[in-house]
Every structure is written in structure tokens, then in C-alpha cells.
Amino acid sequence: MEKMWAGRTDGKTEKAADDFNSSIRVDSRMYREDIEGSIAHASMLARQGIITPEEAAAIIGGLNEILDGISSGKIEVDNDAEDVHMFVERLLTEKIGDAGKKLHTARSRNDQVALDSRMYSRNRTKEIICSLKKLIAALCGRAEEYKSVILPGYTHLQRAQPVTFGHHLMAYAMMFLRDTDRLTDALKRVNVSPIGSCALAGTTYDTDRKYEAELLGFDGVCLNSIDGVSDRDFCVELAADIAIVMMHLSRMAEELVLWSSWEFGFISLSDGYTTGSSIMPQKKNPDMAELVRGKTGRVYGDLVALLTLLKGLPLAYNKDMQEDKENLFDAFETALACLEITTGMISTMTARPDRMRAAAGEGFINATDLADYLVGRGLPFRDAYKISGRIVAYCIENRHTLETLPLEKYREFCGRFDEKVYEAIDLDECVKRRISEGGTSVASVEKQIKAVREKLEEI
Ligand code: ARG
Image (cartoon, rainbow, N blue to C red; front, side):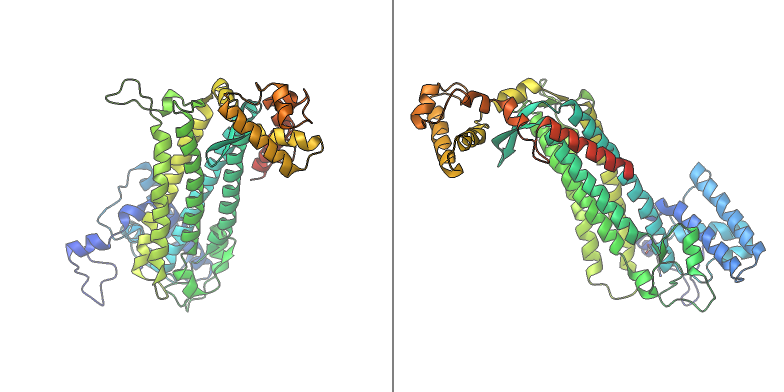
């Protein structure tokens, strides 16, 4: 088949070169955006008197039929085509004849591909935001359920202070909420229309870029046509934001793996999200959580690939840019899959409060409260801290916990101790007293859940 761009050359490229050059296996995913963009373009051309209303009607009718055909599966994507733009234009010309050849007036594939990519990215980003909202809602639900379940909070993966499981889960909800914020903000920069930039220099036709942008739901048009066809900041920015989503998912996945181990035993994942071993009958492996953690690496790779792709490119369009889609689409798809699986795991896991409580009872995680108790008895914090540390060391050596150490022993370390110390170090009390904003008390966690749920309504 003769190339649409044959003329300057005979268009008879090597088969290997055609295969190498073709991007349709990746960019055919944008067929809907490509067709919607072309429909708007035809409408604008007709409105400006660049093509006739009859020609526009034929183009739009033909494009709608192609859209139906591809989405219903009646039209198969031709993987030998150069890209989705050429594929659709060829189908149109075959269908409606000469009018089809006028569609490409006052545009270039350079602004067309930028347009399609932005429209496609806009849709997928909205899907990611929607999935993030579902995950956040699931975390709020589980946090509500487990708002008074106590477990050790960790720093350096060493038992630190008692926290509630609800509090811990809400920490993740906050991260994912920031992610929705970041992506929503990025959409502002995605949603600027490049169409009408043409090859790079704009056009001599009397086009109306603003009208075309409005038809396609853009907030405005890019102000420099060279930038319009060269700018892939939105790809990098979205990949970066998605990489952060993945980093958050991966941190949570890591905890799901740890918590579901025999050593921790804090949660049990639903059978629906675990696998068995082909040899060890006792195994219940957290494969899905591990894969979420693992797939984070490939999304980081997507981001670095995009940054590297662009760093040496002179203005304006360069064919290198065709490579951007594979990475960006992979980031979208990986994140969407990971979000769905993670929401499933979070919604169906069961906490094991007995195990959490047992771990909370063993690590002197109320030592800070012991020091605070002495502060309440008039000691400066640094002195109280030192005495408490000595008591902990004594307990470790003599197989005591702070709860089992007799009052006489306490008084040997400091005369200000009285029987109220046991109440001060009671884990439930330790948690209940942490009412500072954002703290771990049930009341504070309830406030956090409420605040996050309110924010979800606004997104
Ligand atoms: N398939 C190309 C891409 O994704 C479309 C733009 C091609 N433009 C060109 N002048 N060859 O970048």
C-alpha cells in the first residue's frame, strides 16, 4: 500500500523499517481520543469555512462509524499500519472518498499525537483518582473498625509506642489523599490543548484553536506552537505522580507482607489474595502484596525512561517522542492494577487484635509514658527519661515488664513513684491520653476519619 506521505520519497520503505517505525501496537489504545479529536477538528474547519458543511458532515459521519466499528470489534486494528492516526485517516478515506483527504488540513500528526496523548492521559488519570478514592474509602472503613485495637507503633522497626491499628491505617489514607491532590493538580497542566500548533509553526489557515479546545473539554490552548508539539512535561509529571502512588502502595504492601508473617501475625490476608506453594503444604504466600511492591520498580523505570528520552531532544517534534507512550501507558496500567488489588486486600484482610496486643505488651512501648508520669511528679523530662531507661534495663535483666515490676522496686529508682504508676503505663490509658491533633487516641482517629471522608466528597 502506498504511504500517505509518499511524494518526496517513493515511500517504498523496507519491511523491517516499517515494523520498526510502527507504533500502532501501543497507540491504538488512543483510537477513541484520536477520533474524537478529528471530529472536533472537522467541526472547527467547517465553522471557519475551511471545508464545507457537507464535507464536515461526511467526515464526522464516517468517523463515528469507524468509532463504533472499532469499539464493537467489527473493525480490527491493522497492526501493519504506521500508527493510529494514519490508520483512522486511511479508513476514513476508504469509506467516504475525497472529503476524507481534507480532514488533515491545518493540522499535523505532531499536534495530533500531542492532543491524543493529553486526552488519553486525562481519562486514565481520572480513573486512577477514582481508584485512589476507593482505596482511601476502604482504609477509612477498616480504620473505623479497628480504631481501638492496640499494636506497637515502630520506629527503626523497633517497638516504639502503642498506637491503634486505625491510626496506622489512616496514615496510609493520608498518603493516598495527597496522591489524589497531586494528580488533580497535574490535570490542570495536562488539560491544555496543543491542537492547531500543526507541525510546529502554526498555520496560515484561519483556524479557531480555542473553539476546537472547548469542544474537546480543554481549559485552554498552549500559547506557543513550538512548545505545543514538543512539550511532554505532562507525561513526566504524571509518571512522577504515579511513581509516588506506587511508592506508597509498596510501603503498605511491605507491611502487609510483614504483618501476615508468622513472626508478626498481626493480620491474615484473605485466601482470595494469597497463593500456596507447589511444594510446602503449610504455605500461604502474600504474592499479590509482593507483586505490588515489585511492580513499583517498573513504574520508577517508566519515569526514568521518560526523563532520559526527553533530556537531549532539540525542539520541536522528534520521532524519539513516539517512545513516550509505552512508558506512560505502562505506568497508568500498572498503577490501576495495583490499586485495585490493594483495595481488595485491605477490604478483606482480618486483623488479629490478640497478636497485636501481645506484641504491644512485650517491648516496653510504654516507657515514654513512664517518663511522662515522673514529669507529672515534678521531675525535668531529661531526668525522668534517664530513670525510666534504667528501670527498663533492670526489667530486661530481671525478666520483668513495667507492668510486673513491684512498687518497692520502682521506689528504689525514684522516691516519687506511687501506685498510680500502673495506671499511667496501662496501654489503653497510654493511647487514650494521646488526644493531640493527629494523635493515636480513638477520639483523634475518629476526627481523622471524618476529615478524610469529607475530603473524599470534594474530590
Ligand atoms: N506515531 C507518532 C508519535 O507517536 C506520531 C507523530 C508522527 N509525526 C511525524 N512527523 N512523523 O509520535
